[in-house]
Amino acid sequence: MKATVRPQMNTETNLPQHLAVTSLSLDDAPSIQQLYDRCSDYWQLCEGRLPLPSAAIDEFADRPQDCTPAQKQLAGVRADDGALVALIDYLVDYPVRGTWYLGLMLVTPALRSGGTGAALLAYFEDLARRAGAGQILVCVLDENKRAFRFWERQGFSVLRAYPPRLFGLKMHGRKEMGKILAEQAPRQ
Image (cartoon, rainbow, N blue to C red; front, side, top):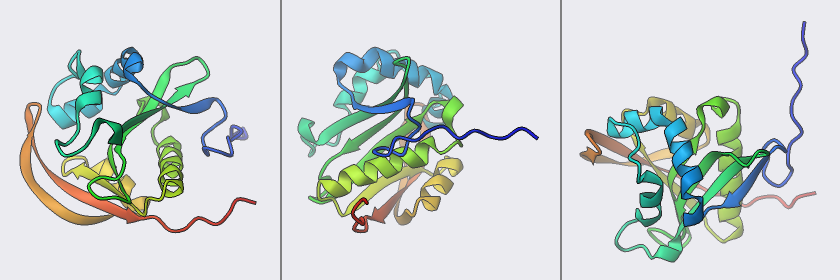
């Protein structure tokens, strides 16, 4: 029987050492677009079409009207070869101070179901907690059952349901889910 070798983990991010978290800017739009193209299944589910050629650039401007540009943040996970393999898009102190809103967490298909999403979320929760956030919110499409189960496993619960609205070419109802961030024990 062949033994499974677990990769060495980065103690700061809980991701395998060959993956690094970095902030993303408009300069990273080509890498983001490549990730979106690799995650075409998500776009088909969400919008009923492939990602638009402008999707990565549009991501930087996509925020609620009452949210400032400084509140909108994107972070990515890069592999050793520089390829962007995951990203999180979030709003700081939105809709109220102390709440962070996770707009999108996207992981390349090759790394799904292997703990990358959970590790990235744990990193994000730690980042939010250290900045003084006490709660994280996320909105999940009713059709995205797999994502709903993921968020439930991570301790999120449904707060409210929203009526269907158009996303791209598809209508979706949504569930807003939330998680209260507990105080973290100091690292040893």
